[in-house]
Image (cartoon, rainbow, N blue to C red; front, side, top):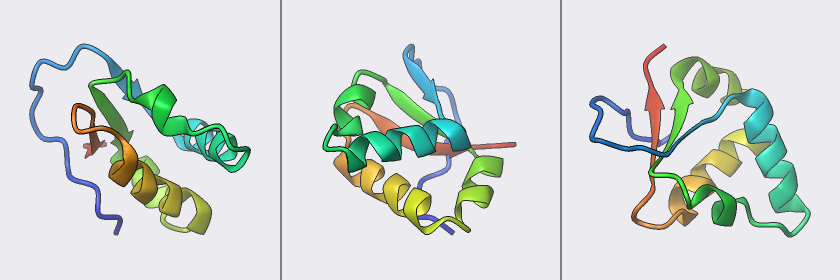
Length: 85
């Protein structure tokens, strides 16, 4: 399982990026083409990845690695969390 904290309670975030498989693949592709996606996503208060997406991307080395790197790279004002189904 990826080391992404579970998002359990709404804390007043107003700008939320909801990421699915396609958006994660797209953002990964951008980062591979020297366009860092953390700059795009840093405008959000929360990057939310549903649990079903987390389960699916565990089989994809490049997407799971990308999510781990994203979690480490976004600024401290942006939370990355996985949500309930």
